[in-house]
Image (spheres, rainbow, N blue to C red):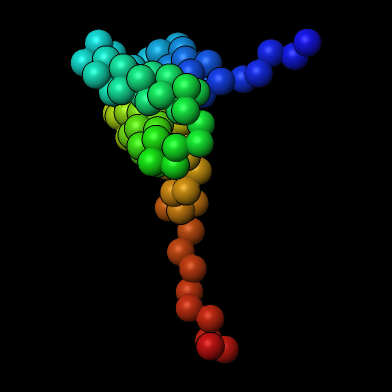
Length: 98
């Protein structure tokens, strides 16, 4: 028999991954608890649309914790990849045909 994945187990997996990545600290515990409580509520009453809306909002807020932090290596890598490539050794003249 296959075990049904619950919202709570999904939230707990997200929290674990975020902790492992260093994105969650003790100061974030209120947001963690909110997401877990709403996940439990959705699991208990999956037909209540307002609970789903609140749960999704809490999940989005949870996932944004730690984004853009100075030590966020993924964000730093993406910024470097987006940077214009120029080594400063050559200058490009304007194209006279344009």
